[in-house]
Image (cartoon, rainbow, N blue to C red; front, side, top):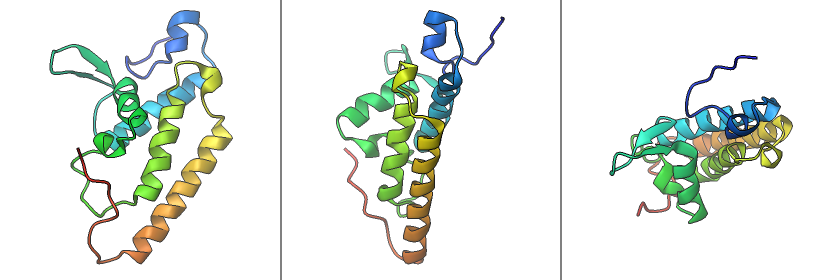
Length: 139
């Protein structure tokens, strides 16, 4: 089988085992979610012109509890709830685990996204016309 994929989205397990699974799609979805949160492409140059994969970059920040460091600075302050964004970021990272066995099942992914969406909708309804959300200061 000849598999084609875009660099940055392709499951790292595929590179090692040359086998695609449902969890391969989960990896790609996680990368797309990280793109939505960060505004960054799946692969981008670092200050030293080395190529950085978005999941590695996000993981480094989230391991230090720096959720705000991965949020796109173009997202207007007060346009989202950290209570919905944090679970979204963490499930995105779980989708990007290097080993498929550590990635969530699609049912867990859907449940987390549904809960985060409900939380955001409730927050937006209660914060119409108000100032910024409860945001952790950027470092």
